[in-house]
Image 1 (tube, rainbow, N blue to C red):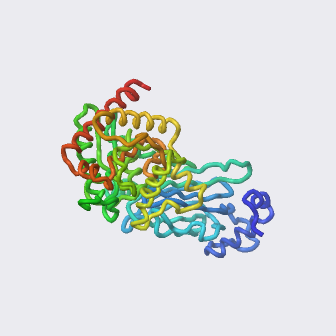
Image 2: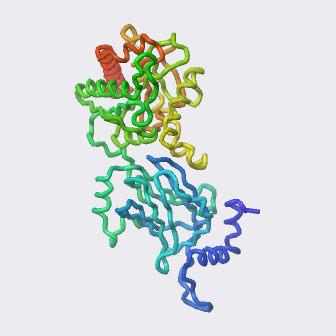
Image 3: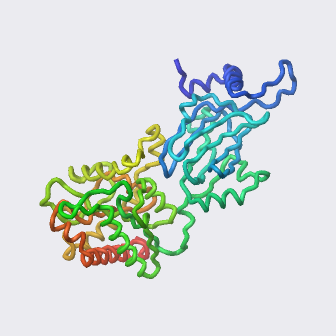
Length: 419
């Protein structure tokens, strides 16, 4: 019978020595001679671990019986993150820290006497945006080391390696806050917008009923037109999540928006429906409960995009995944609704709208907790009239103008006006 965490730690005073001894033998830790009076401090016990995440963000949590001091370094060729610890006995099952998400291999064990190390081998350039020790909520249950990793560019990873000195660790305290990407804007004081062209690469999206044009080409053309118009506005900086026919996972899209310090996230799509008579634009905001069956079906289909490239958001224990893919905070959600209402008003009388044009569903790409986000279905490639318009450059320009006007009004009323 396996004890709960609370039960295990309540018995730690009696059983601790045996657990540490067993873990030390398994990991090859040097043991003091029997009868030695200078055995030194007891090693920490890492008694539990968990990991969750995807190709853009991954969280690792390790539970200790006491607060661990730690340091972090980066190693190139291949990309690795190294966490150095005091002497530690790793007493959790290896499967609990099996590699996933950003990491293809995870190793841990004893180094020299009095020290231990965790080595995280990454699938791509990576950085820690948070590394800290937190006291567990229930008194007497020890501490946990929380490591939040995020994808980065090859240049930034090279810079991280170059600026560090092994003799002067990046961190050697209980808390290392490396800062959220969105807290370090590249353009201070500028209103920044991430424009997301849906689909791309192996994920072609929907296909035009008559012309067989893939959705990924239509969304990219619209995204470029919208970005160009937004960048005409004073004090605005718009950027594309993808500039060419590249596959991006849903999490990558959100992470790129955060790394670009986006104040808004606008995702563009042009789906298909079985009912070919339905046409018109729709604006979606995030909700766990879909506003209707059509919204639920569209969100489910869009959320399957990652599976085309072998990615899945179901990559860890639910309680950890919830941290990574948290629902939008109330304030951000209110701003998202305000932006959606502005887009609907800007479209009215100019762009064909579906009945009840502002709808809600659980789109994964809208789950950034700190960025107001909307998804715009520009029309339906299953409808002949919509398909013709979606391929018309003049109509595309009209839609881009209306979207840019909606953003300008949103910014004036919500940001400048302090609403």
